Length: 478
Image 1 (cartoon, rainbow, N blue to C red):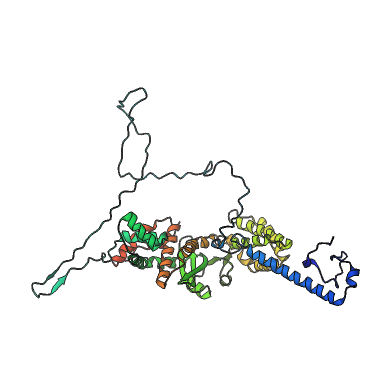
Image 2 (cartoon, rainbow, N blue to C red):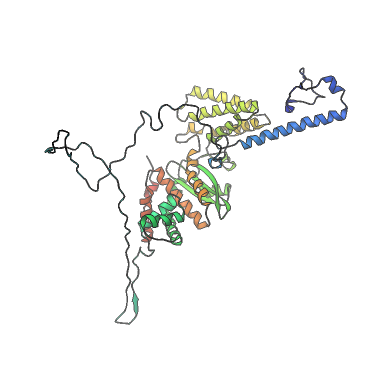
């Protein structure tokens, strides 16, 4: 039976000095083989080794997903779900013992009904004295009746000069759709991200009035202008922050590739759509900001001259991808590096002592420099970690810096869903609407504020040519 070997582990038989002959034929057979056959076999060994290397690279690409690479979750196949956790769940699903409950809040009643006992099991029906022991709350949606006001404009001739005079529509009522209705359309279409046809159907089915897609678009255009001061204020606050989490994702305008950028922190999230993913776009986003940057490993971010915390989650996913390789050396390095990076990330919640940090650093450096000169993916990742070394530990030195860019990625998530649902926008005007409404939505969410009252106030001020209240945006959160 022929000995099974891996061609990639074979050297040139003519130059092999191994004590253990690795080929399925003897040295004598090799020496007796004609030279043209020698050359052909050497060529085949080299070719097979090259093809095996290419196959391994292709397999690693095919096996990439959002868990083991920098690919976004939206790129994962719906047919390839990660295996379920091996940890068995005890008891039934849902909240477990000790979990803090979230009961329905008791609201201010609009009416009350006192319910007294009707009869006793003994047959008595008279209860002269009773007391309240429990309040049951029922919430109902009242019948929706739209308030429709007809402004009947009159005209008349001046008795002095005979000129015809016509009454004008009162200020703030020219559009035909009031602030609350306009804000509702903005809430459904922008904050909730629904289509124009969905808004149209909702107005017809629930509110009981017809409205055209063109009229909806005009309402949205007015809302976009009304919240422009809020958007500009969010940008100013973002550019004054000590720390910002910056990320970007693809966007489309009429099918042309663009980029949706975000600059988020603990108080605001500022969005910008730009034609490019470049240094020019990055500078347009940050303007004069010069704080601490938290980001992934995109080249523009790496050149940041101030402090920068690289996203450890991205590095952990890359290490996980290496740990899943078939090559034992690459897989071993990937597992060890992934575990060390996870330990580093956990230090954000359990700060290490100086002794623990020194031990970790020595172990981590030893691991990296053991592999940094390799000419494969192990070496490339080790050299990347060496280049990023100064950006790995910033979160331990500076209060308020997180070890990952999850804040920026979470802020972008709604924009990704919008892009997938609507395929982007159709005009620059649409881009401005997306920038402004998502910035307002995410900023309100960070402050646990409802967006509807903000939209109502903004539109009411817009109709009256007044300045909206944006002081709450510039207030710091304690």
